[in-house]
Image (cartoon, rainbow, N blue to C red; front, side, top):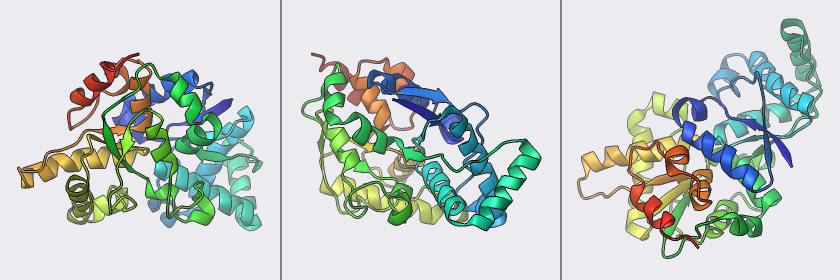
Length: 299
């Protein structure tokens, strides 16, 4: 199975260990991750399309054209990249006038052709539906016992469900939960599971206090309602924001004890036996205790 890996901007810039985890764990499951050489920003969800829709769609079409040349679906870990690209693809397919303008601009300025055959998927969709939990269980060197987690679903992969949804029910997503359970980790429910982490770029820049409070309410609910040992996410924005906001909350409330945050592919790679220094080394909240428990659980 071949896929075009769309990294976006934030993964290679701020969390290259997530990229390394993806590049190591996915081939173990039978996926060949091809580089989309020359790919650009998705572009940025919300802000770029609001300023110039045609230019924004042209950038998306540029990215799609690279995947079309390779004949592979695009796969991304970033929830915002996934949503931005998926919604752009929907517009380009459904609106002939927009498509013609974008195709003309792309030919004139870049000498590239967008045919409209591209597709884009989130990595959780690929892991759950193409690889499956049985293959994941068989791939890990270190199944985990006696550990519990909570999950954070990237809201941009859930809504609007008629465009971006890949879950059976966007109101009751189950894929990330199932993938975490395939590692042997119990997943605890909590009341704010579907609440946004608050990390969306426009929200953080427009109201850092509001974005922080979003995260604080979620984090307090996790601590009050569960006995989780860690938080598992599947989006670089959720990873960054929940990691950083726990440090901020601990400053305000010394009684708050932070939890380590992992991207799913990082957790998977550690359970597969890959070096944590390569795949899970960058964080604000220390991860060593969880990593050592996993490394001590080898077969």
